[in-house]
Image 1: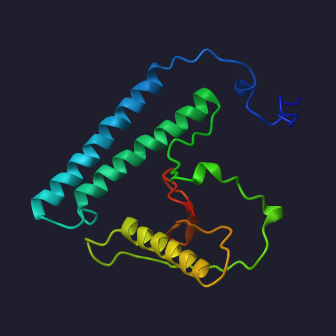
Image 2: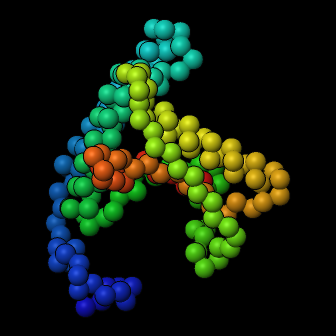
Length: 183
């Protein structure tokens, strides 16, 4: 059997091959729950900055807690979209001005050299945040890409991703909160 694009769908879950009657109320409820959590995220961050007159609120455990809550809701939305709609959700994708105009680069059109760098990061204090470490790596990747462009290179693609190692096993996404980015 093939789908409308001519692709073989013999190994596709049969519930995704025919139209289903889906009640959107539960999905809308999740979106409302996410909206509430995002409002809480803003309120917590603003409160922390005002409370301590801090330049940043990233290192506060209250931020980590609300970020975890947002991530859990995002994971639930993704799971429900796939289960109920047969849709791999892109609701957590990030896009900046101009990104929408760029076409995805086909692998066949890439040429050049690939460079890789890796870090195994383990917090050593209660205030150390792996999210902050990832943000630093991501920011460093952008600075490197910008510098390479400034000295005469075209950076066709770059990315930062995060995996978790627990007792000798690597999990690229242990809780459904993929934090990979492409630049």
